[in-house]
Length: 237
Ligand SMILES: Nc1ncnc2c1ncn2[C@@H]1O[C@H](COP(=O)(O)OP(=O)(O)OP(=O)(O)O)[C@@H](O)[C@H]1O
Picture (cartoon, rainbow, N blue to C red):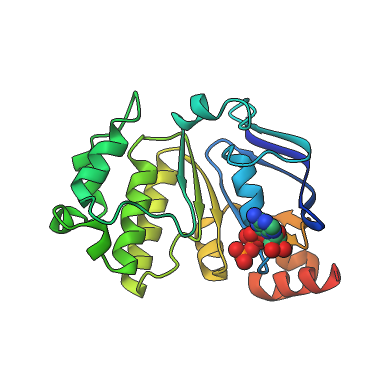
């Protein structure tokens, strides 16, 4: 079953064409990676997926719904962690989890989410006093507190130290084992290779290729996803 269907999505900001006819599908339970250079259109695509933006043309369906029209209903089933998101400086970690948990009809137990993400020692710390990595971890926990069917993670482990990164990978593996569909935007090829079933390579607002790491490597005659990406990105110039 297709959980996400994006067909010929287009979006411009004035004269800048950010997304120029993007098409891909994500199946139920799949972990799907989106890679691309800075400005390739990844964030714009993700924003259209979660209903924060409406494309100029094309269609987007998430769990069968149009996110631009059904954002509220979808919010109950969707977990989102965006680049550069923030919270009020004085809000404490436990308060944030409780507050976000209360927004969902079928939320996970926020205390368990707090434990799972190693946030209990920080429960009484204010958001403004957290380190970059701790903020990132909290944002991930908040994306999951609603026990979502689909999770969209933009720059999952940016700012995390190597140990926290590996721990995050392990938790994403658990999500995957539980059948959650995950969309992962990343600049880290090791992360995409380790976690994703399939990848879409975005270049200048278009999908240069979609496939498993093995397929992309075979198609480009390269030895790694990073090399395959560089070949595909260059070929599209
Ligand atoms: N709100 C906006 N107003 C004007 N232009 C924008 C806006 N948001 C994005 N753009 C432009 O659209 C293009 C695609 O940007 P987008 O943020 O979607 O790319 P990205 O792949 O997420 O990049 P990065 O890896 O740097 O985050 C870029 O040229 C960017 O400058």
